[in-house]
Image (cartoon, rainbow, N blue to C red; front, side, top):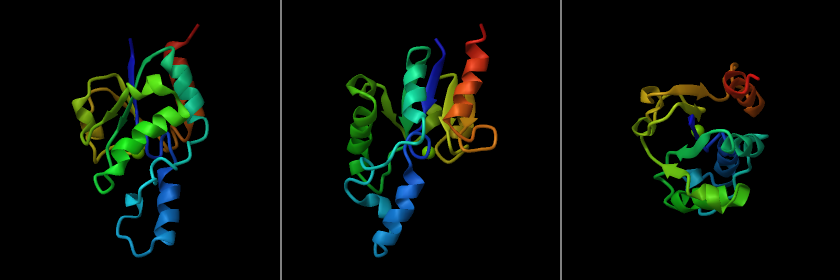
Length: 150
Ligand SMILES: [Mg+2]
């Protein structure tokens, strides 16, 4: 079965938007993402939850996210976020790894093409947020064309 890894920050949840907001509100903090509750409060990216839920019935889907080591709460809150927006079952498919190249699979959907091992990932990188894959609709169309042809 085709295995797809899905990143969290700025792919499933709106990290940058909240980061900028927190930076303004907490100008004394060097790491505005380090506040407890920051990750759990992130808003979902448009259509991300719906598309990933559809993928779950067609593909072997895992969440693959690098932890925010500046915020130890991120380890717990990413897990809570998955249950909040998906369900308990999907928390069993949450992988926190600082090096995404360690995982074996066919696709990685990520907004960065390097930094956390994305450039060494053995499968195909779906570079989210680029002109080719600007949003979740584009990602779904790509997989429909690849796998659901008839
Ligand atoms: Mg990301």
